[in-house]
Amino acid sequence: MNLLLDTHTFLWFVWDDPKLSDAARTAITDASNRKLVSAASWWEIAIKISLNKLDLGAPYLSFMKSQMARNCFEALQITIEHSSHITTLPFHHRDPFDRMLIAQAVWEQMPIVSADAVFDAYPLKRIW
Image 1 (cartoon, rainbow, N blue to C red):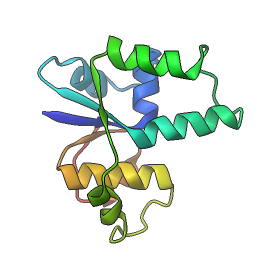
Image 2: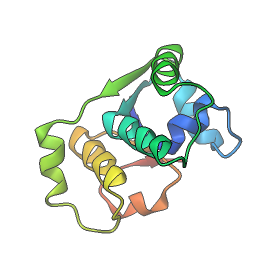
Image 3: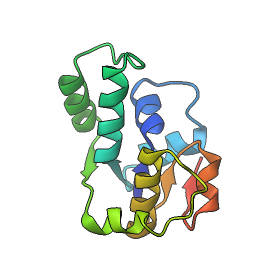
Image 4: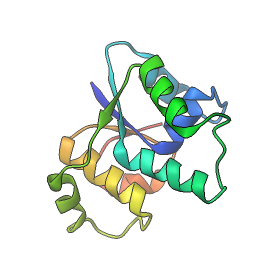
């Protein structure tokens, strides 16, 4: 199964944060699942670093590249179709990064691994 990781899910997994649910950890560590991290999450992390709201404990580029490779995570690029889907999404959620993740999960018909219960208002499967 393909899984889209929310930004916090990606970080909590790589940091082994106890806030990550058992169901999320199990889905991510299941070798039969393909784990994807959106370019929107990379952008969100970079912006939070630039605003001094996030410290990775390492330089951004080396941290992101090493964690993507170490955990066998794949990139999910943003397509025109993904951004087009945002034009019709209801505003249950206003965060622009989350709206892109929602659009990608819906368009690609893949579950999103996220603690954000607001995602349940959209036609997608949320694992948590």
